[in-house]
Length: 174
Image 1: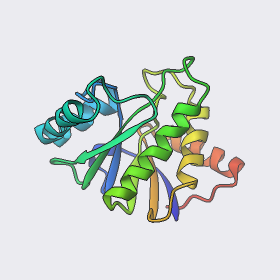
Image 2: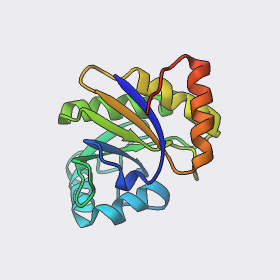
Image 3: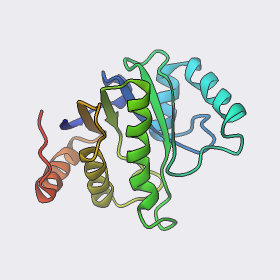
Image 4: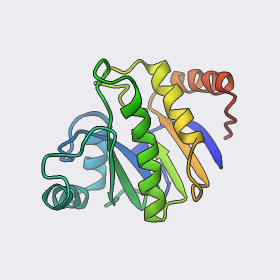
């Protein structure tokens, strides 16, 4: 399995599945969540509303993941996961976001997946720890995933993530 770290816009990333750092409502919001809903179009929201109606009426719990179609995005699927707010979790739920996202992606038939840095935005998770947890989670991908990519929004974050990958002895390639 290949792990990549790139800078870019996850809504334009060509993977079988892209991961949405969603809020529990699944109805879109700010940051990555809002960008994915805007770029993907109304089909994603319609599927999220059906998930809320049929499976998670009280909202998707932190650390869990569900999959929808990708609407107008260049991916086949969107995996929605709810990251924890920093200070309200010891990291267990954040680790679960990666494991659960990979699990539902494989169940959907995805072989390539792209992640944003979950919880490191408005949820306040320290970036270096979020990167460590992302890379460890991606390195533990189940059989069936050929490539996992960490898509970082800022160019400077790529060098930091590559340094952390070396510290963790996780091989990353372009």
